[in-house]
Figure (cartoon, rainbow, N blue to C red):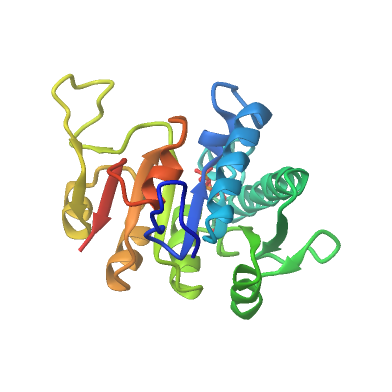
Length: 244
Ligand code: UDP
């Protein structure tokens, strides 16, 4: 691991960054805000320069959200496959942008789409990360009825990541919706169990249970705050840490 300009060594060796569709579209109604994506990729580059291994799990809600498609009469399973395909589209744009910044990157998908990218397997994922590729994991876990938050925790456990960094549009986990409740407080730290009991809506329960059972910490942070990602990996207080 390399030191940063203040001679400090990063806290984490291998991270999984979860980027949702909601973050990717920013203020757009639909699609990807490329200005924002370029800024995210620049921040990823600064982590790579510190010797941190970066895996990305990408969401798809900016293109297709399973729940919305279900409402218009498409079956659950078809809607979810459409959602998983959307994550592959995002994955293509993310890897393309990462390549533009001179980094090595590789897209894997949990669903076989052999003319686009290789199918996910854990050995290859670990190999890519160990060889300074930004590994982009798309296609969710490859099964309907799951989410990309669960995928992030699952991939994190499989590749033995030190932490999941969940990029959001808010500063962290709040006791209630800060837009609706003026006295909502932001937690700097919350136990898995409390996050599960309080049902704070920041992550689905399957994801939280997986993380809890494998003692994988999650940091929920604001991707729109410049330098937040860097501050987290250097051990500074940023966002909310969900842990034991
Ligand atoms: N999805 C799925 N299985 C998975 C991951 C995702 O069926 O393992 C589907 C689901 O329909 C979901 C959509 O893909 O609504 C997009 O994923 P998600 O909602 O997690 O994306 P995000 O909210 O992070 O943009």
